[in-house]
Length: 133
Image 1 (cartoon, rainbow, N blue to C red):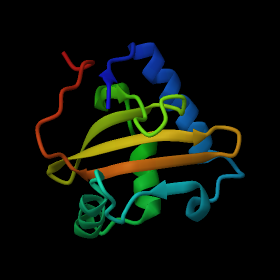
Image 2 (spheres, rainbow, N blue to C red):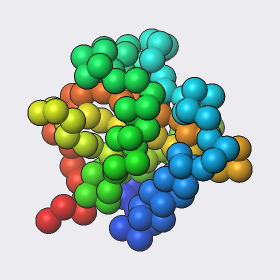
Image 3 (cartoon, rainbow, N blue to C red):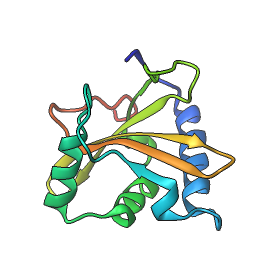
Image 4 (cartoon, rainbow, N blue to C red):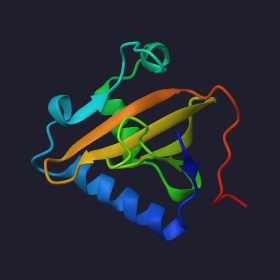
């Protein structure tokens, strides 16, 4: 995936949009928050399942973590390599418990209120965060 860093205002705007989706009255957690948990080729999905199990997290907990993200948690933006015209993924690193969790998420469909979290697993390496000085 091709990564780049967006401006702090772009990330603030993205987080605001994501929070609107996640808090919308029409948002149905089980239907509209998709978390990759099964392993597929070139995917860390199996790591997601292990991390969720280790943290004793379900979709509600992941939604709560997504709602708590700030610009300080932001790491980078990645083009969706399956289809570059689709919305990009934003990558965040958040301390949960005593470990940093790598979160890669996108608003899959703003109109239909859908969020796709392709990664929610312990970070394999320390994460860079451009908005922390």
